[in-house]
Length: 363
Image (tube, rainbow, N blue to C red; front, side, top):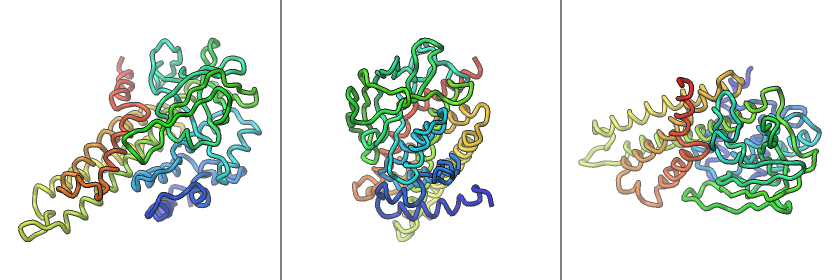
């Protein structure tokens, strides 16, 4: 039986785990969620991003407050770098829940002057937010998910000159010269932070190049991975809002009958279902492309991020309207999904930025 045949079971376990309250990290580690992509020889499950995506969708469906997003990106960064004993140790400890390595990917887009072009990012990737020279790293990045909860930070930086090769630098949160400032946002289900490095010392054993010959492209895939992870989260919250709305219109009565019997309400719910179905196809295609390291996976990633995160905001807004007056109250909980969907739309590239990336194919 292939792992794809177990996705239904993964989904059921994750949904049951997240159903009541946000689990602490030890509960997530005990469920195996933290080690899904860690190789089996390092105490992980040896799965792929396709399995992680199942959990990410359920995180969005439950609007869970958890550092899972940042840590999954950290695991992806460790797996993308050239192997070493230190990385193996970090992966093993992450799978067991003893470490929370969080990736610091910096700004999503910056000017072409950074010289970081690769096939998919058209020279607009923000690797240049951090620079490492000798044993010192400096730079600043905002809106980094889960950085304040990390046990280790995995900072994506570049080496000035020599083609601006990207590297991953492991830094302890309490290192001299490093600042992690919580960054309040309207969405209370996310924890974001500003990370600033001012001449932070990085030993040679804690700075790793990417594996393979196409190092710029490998670094770019981390951004694509982050974008699709957010799209998965948005798809999950869309599912939750569709289910909640359909359930509500079945029981809410006006003029002696359920409002779900009114044609206008039925059309609105049908439109929501169509949106969810289209978004699911886009997310599935992007996840499959990234999990299989398909050429041009950035196209599927940009399509999923640009469409799904924008559609999620529209769908949650429609769900709030169909709930009537109760939908605008704090008790309904819909506000939490609307805020999360709105933040998701901006994280790791706005829809407009990703559409500009897609337009480069026709330049």
